[in-house]
Length: 228
Image 1 (spheres, helix red, strand yellow):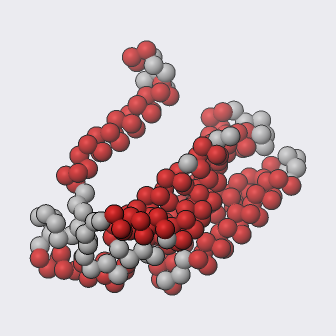
Image 2 (cartoon, rainbow, N blue to C red; image 1 turned 90 degrees about the vertical axis):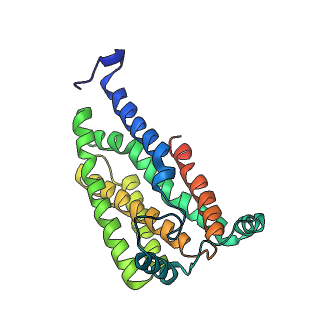
């Protein structure tokens, strides 16, 4: 790594420092870039464009206005059974994503006499495949207006992939590598589809915000479980 030794730090540490700095800067300027609602201080939209955006929001999610915040809305979000169901669904989808990102290089390294850089390189194609499955699923899901059927399909594919990883011996590295493709390519669209599925099932703007926040909080904790 060309930055190895700069500032007395290893080259790999600079990757995280630079990524963290970009995230920090983006977080600082985000209040001036992200607007709460299309008709609130969105100077880059003219009146006609604002009406078009609001019409699309209403057609897509049923929301015609931002509404007003009150704690009763928060209580309704917490007490809604759909919130908790989507929390469980999301952690079920997100945890395999975290697990795969942590252990895929190790899994691939065990399939042959690969060096660390080679195993990292071989872990890239499954994520390219995951990008394709996610985009195709997003397109078909929006075209058909269906979410659950795609979640069920990819969940079954993921289970098949993990069964293959467990049962196929190391003497068949090609089959195991295929199983890695299947597991990663199944988990990615499940995560994205769950987010969209949940967002479309809460009518009030603030109730949706609370419910999605709870869902992301539990789902992202899947990284803690996956690392064990």
